[in-house]
Length: 177
Image 1 (cartoon, helix red, strand yellow):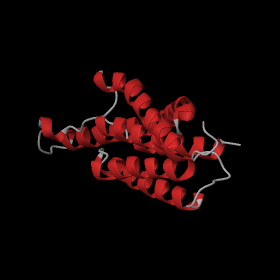
Image 2: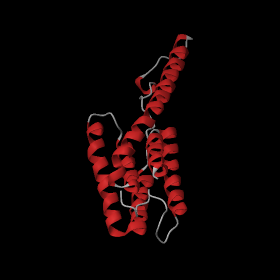
Image 3: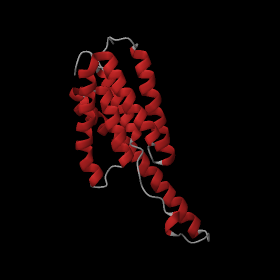
Image 4: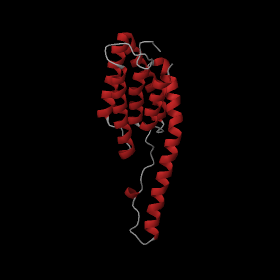
């Protein structure tokens, strides 16, 4: 990764690193909260995350750093596009990961993906547990003489992977020497 890039303190450039991290953290927190609550990542969060990442890279290292961030976003899109095409990953999660990769740059894209994947394991287990509890609650309702289940009553099993993406980004950002 370029020494100038956002994930390599000390942060040179006209805007202090704390401002960049505040923007990054706020947008990732909103994305994660939306994903946990609604199981979707809004484009109204992903687009500003990508634009702010490009701006942060540009302000810290100029056009080459911004191009490197864009390359990282493209690499992550290609790699995770396979999982998305197989239905193993939602489109919002893919877009969020690509936008987040802009912040870490191409040399940190693979560690970011690995760390986000590791962080996704407990997230997926927690989501599976919550899903099973909901199925148990529905079955108990039916067995107690409640109304029969219809297809719309049965929830779709998903995991809020925006949480794992956020953890992966911050593990890379703060893991840099």
